[in-house]
Length: 272
Length: 206
Image (cartoon, rainbow over all chains, first blue to last red; front, top):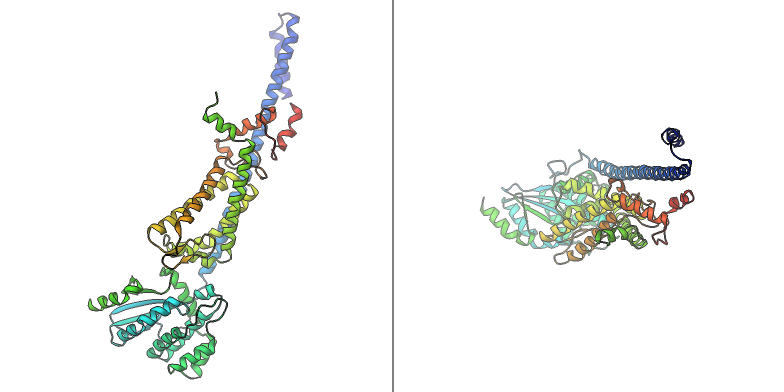
């Protein structure tokens, strides 16, 4: 800055040598004004640069923070992905890791996604449970029941997963026992009561006793929950199947509105 | 003598604009903070809420359920503090637009879901879904975001004048500089200027 002005001042005398002294004072004032203008210009420029630098730094910082937050969320999600055990002890009627309880071997495949605490599932079973049962017994239908447990989270208890495990235990006693037990639990489903358990292990053991599932194996299986890993697997498979509500019913791979269940089932059986 | 463009320029940087932007900024940031805070402790439920829209593959929807609440909190915090206001407003405007599209598409497809905007979500009994207020509300939030993109300068903000984020892309450098020049020359009646400390510090050199 000072360098520049001294340079321009040094040049001036040569140029203006022949001119009168009276003019030189006006010239000096003009020079001063020009210098001030230049200085102001530079200062303004420096301020703008500083603003721009600070602004850029803030932007970079904020974008970094947002990106880090996103990555943290991703990491939490990724760590949840490995939650479902890949090899779990499976109940007798479960034939693949994370699969549902399979009853019957008929040509029409029904896949039923339910939660033992879900009132609409209770209503569905009251309406169609016996019909499905009949079609399994007659050899028309292969029924796969996927017992979900997401209502545990919604209701703040653990009754769905406790019942899902017990349902697995009931299948160890046989197909009829499993289907009986499944319907009995729904028949005993209390009103939704957040924070309260719908039933405890003793209740479930007693429900099993009602349908001729007895013995020390049954009781310890309900209490010790050896199939809890499988219950977790089923809960996790809900996501891949795109299940967002219960009951969700599939007949031969096609989702069916529960209200039209009977018609669709008859059609499917007739088509065989 | 003063066309619409001049009047807009006069409004940008005026104290009225700055205070309106302050209210809009803190309001929008607060909404994001609350929305994110209510969902962040229930990522599984948030994931189910996203899945219920049936717009994304299940795993992707789950990922959104985990990441979205955190992003909302980060953006809400930035807006409330007034850090990189314009960029954050741009982000949240895009987010609100996405919400509007998601809810409108659920509506159009006849889904019966709760928006899950502030926690909760998932399917609700037929006839209980209430989409219109949600769409209008989110459009309102989008409009607030658009306002802040246009007028990011505000009071009680970390951002200083001309630094409201993305200011360097050129769109508003002019009015920022003009505003500063006007302020310095005293031609603008700008009673409240909490970010003007730098300008007044340079005053004596004039």
